[in-house]
Image (tube, rainbow, N blue to C red):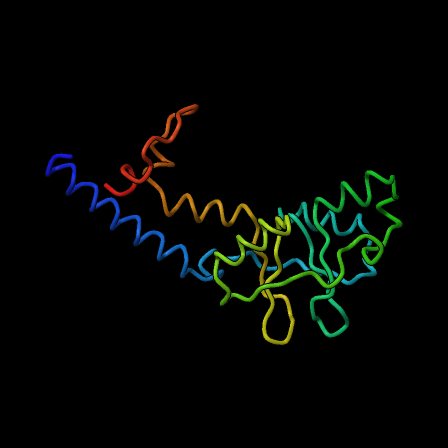
Length: 174
């Protein structure tokens, strides 16, 4: 390598280390999670879907009488637990088709842990709760993708359709 190439390589490496540190240390609060849409387990699937459509959210959080997280019902549940088995959405209560006691994170958990949960368990929507178990937000895979795009703006914004990323670190590190 020439001296100029050598210097550019180390600049890119330093920039990538800084991005990596930001990615590993960022908390879920950085993602600006959506306000949760909460319903009781007695609400019907139809009511949940209408609320999801109105708020443009991928799911609803089910809360108990004290307002603590008790379950989650997502668009995936609509397909696999309602439409597939041909249940009547207007007569099916959420308690019959929700995922009870879902794993939840806090706003202080790291984004890297949210990615881990989504990757390992296949979640696309993760509830956020406070210390008492009350829902305070929802993080989706889309939130994480948007955040990642913000970490690598040059690569994402300057890519033509169909282009492959070549030496992405050199582009973003410049």
